[in-house]
Length: 81
Image (tube, rainbow, N blue to C red; front, side, top):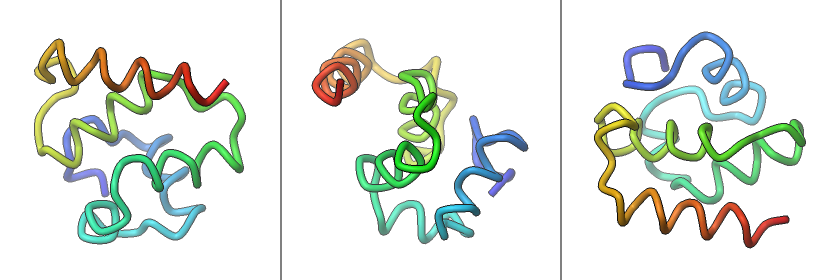
């Protein structure tokens, strides 16, 4: 998992804990399902984690996500509260 951008040791471990052990599985599950699985186990899962996962799926640094994508992710994150 660490070969993907934005996936450091901590996030990689969180993904593994929810059964997401390869980049292929992450892409198959998709952003929202993957994030919700992590959030079920870790209530502190934050917006930056959502950005990181989306960047990993797109194979880019999360800083390079478009402003529209970031805004959409922010709205999604806020809708979960």
